[in-house]
Amino acid sequence: MERRQILKTAGILATGGVTGLAGCSSSGNGDGGGEPTATETQETAGGSGDSNTVMMVTEGSEYYFDPIGLFIESGETVTFEIQSGSHSATAYKEGTSTASVTRIPESAEPFNSETLSEQGATFDHTFETTGTYDYFCIPHKSLGMVGRIVVGEPGGPAEGSMPPDGDVPESQTIVDQSSVSYSSFSG
Image 1: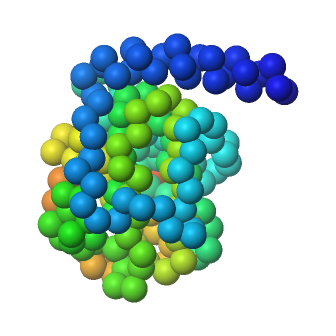
Image 2: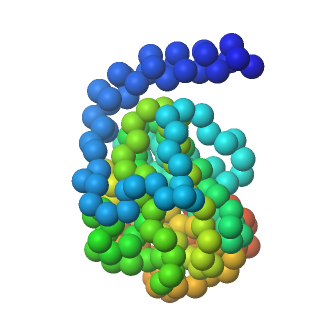
Image 3: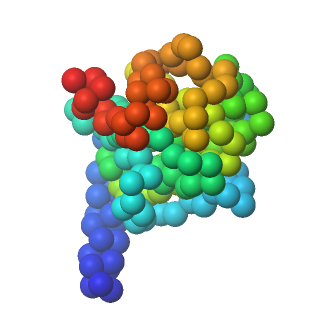
């Protein structure tokens, strides 16, 4: 196990320079919501490997979250993990980074990983408030890189419409399927 972690770390360091040159390494502007709270952590490598992991992916000219729709219960943590490219997981909360609208439940804590660049880098957020959360990637929002998480049951300002920057599965579809992959939604 220790040898495997050493090899993974070496691989991350070796590919870090290539990722930075991939044309996808812009930084977030950092205004609002970027500091981790007690329910959030940032790591530089790894990933939980559980079903509450959302991969952040660059694949050719496509930029996406996978799954694009995820259902969890209140109090569960979601890990956002870089598979390739440089991405963020940022809540649509007016005033958080480049969000101009709010699409998370009224009393929910916004989240913002800022832009992560290393393959395997993760950002965790624990969702306490029931409802529907729409989120985006700072550098790829204009290219439609958006996702949706439903906590407990659908509700809040995200219900009944799509995010301003792209399409996501309907909340009830996410509840019914527990997880909606990007390929099945976009395919």
